Amino acid sequence: MRAIWKGAVSFGLVNVPVRLYSATENHDVQFRQVHREDGGRIKYKRTCSIDGEEVSYDDIAKGYETEDGDMVVLTDDDFADLPSKTSKEIGVTKFVPSDQIDPMWLDKSYYLEPDRSATKPYVLLRDALESEKRMAIVTVSIRTRMTMAVLRVRDGVIVMQTMLWPDEIRAADFAHLDDDQKASKQEMDMAKMLIDQLAGDYEPDDYEDDYALAVKELVRAKVEGGEVRVSAPEEEESGEVVDLLAALARSVEKAKAGRGEAPAAASKAPAGAARKETASTTAPKKATAKTTAKATAKKSAAKKTTAKKSEKKAS
Image (cartoon, rainbow, N blue to C red; front, side, top):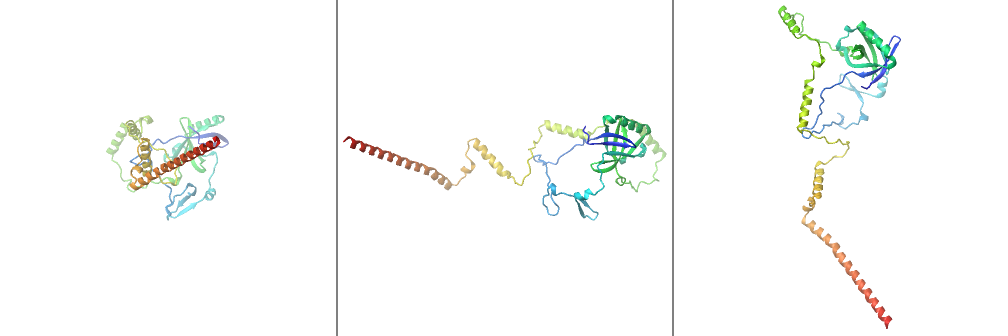
């Protein structure tokens, strides 16, 4: 595990340096939205609901929607003035009986590991909490926001669990649950008998996520059966629009050229174009013949001149 936070537990004059680790992890089966035909991932663009334009991350701000549906845009300067703390202290405010903390109040769990130099005060706090059967109510700042939490002992380790605020717990106001609806003695005896028959100790290994196991088995069977769509590597987004039909046409022409076949464009060319191409092809040949004839004539004239000069010298 990797520590996600470093600080210290302080109670009275005692200070215990600790490291914070996430005590839980989510193993829920995760799915992605894909195209049914080819398995490609579905992407979504960040567009403005007013002007319809795509918005970059730099232009995205936090907004608070009022009860009337109006939107209040908040800036970084606004958040700088809010009461937030970046303290590295887990401050104990009170030690309360463990049975006073309803499990519904508890949220995310973290393990606390002491520094090597703080093992003794860590063990002292752990043993004191266990012997007194109490939890420590603390305040802690995680990711700049102050929150409440409790310190309790589990399997010889101090666990910190963040708590929900009072207004985050909803009341169960059910009108149909009236006190006058009481069970008869026979019904109560039957319920107690059922409870006795199903009574036992909680063993975590007796339970498993059947749905997750079934999904993994289904995926494994499809992989072994060859039902796999190989995802193409994701390319960087750009403003260019790729013409799939044109790309396929170029691929076909390239394949034909590799086999030595004539390109489709040449075979479908008009007759006039073919005649022009033939004329343009024969034109260089005529020019070459004329050039050769001129060169031959020049050589013959040169030979005649040389012969005349020789005769004159001989006479």
